[in-house]
Image (cartoon, rainbow, N blue to C red; front, top):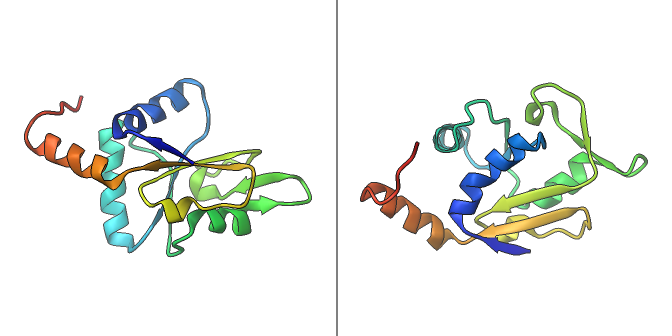
Length: 135
């Protein structure tokens, strides 16, 4: 598992778009609050149609292992909610989360990047104080 700064994370989706690498958000929690957070994130990274899936499962990586992995084909079958309805199979999954426990995986094709919660809190304070410009 790797640690990351929030600034890198905000730029990361832009790099994925340029390289045409499919990506989306798997988030955990109540529907109303998660949709609110997704709306803010989509505005922040200027990606209004970023696909997302809301789950009630804490261990997101284990959820992916159990729900998406097709052992016979050796690929992850990405749910339609995460792919704008396209059929996508992935050999590797990269996860970014602020909770390390959500990243714990025994699957060698799931990589986790942890964003420290303090980094997110600092970013929100800087944003509120006008120290961060969002284009």
